[in-house]
Length: 62
Image (cartoon, rainbow, N blue to C red; front, side, top):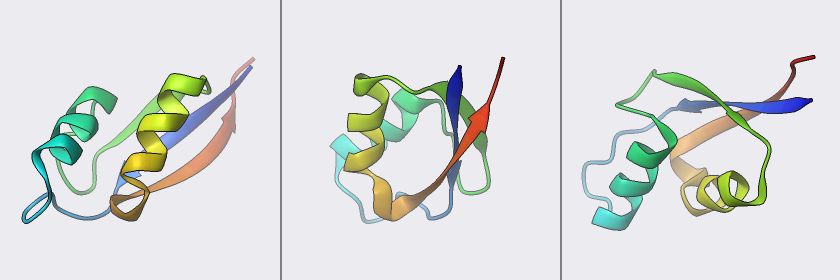
């Protein structure tokens, strides 16, 4: 199964509250933090919303 490794690259200072909440929902706590999430439509939608603050890599778990 494919998963996504999401790394926060930029701070949320000056960003809208909804973007801060989206990053928190993904499990990111600040620049440099990394989480692995499943590749589902809900996670992809959240990632698309904050794409300018993060980097995404596809990883293989299985």
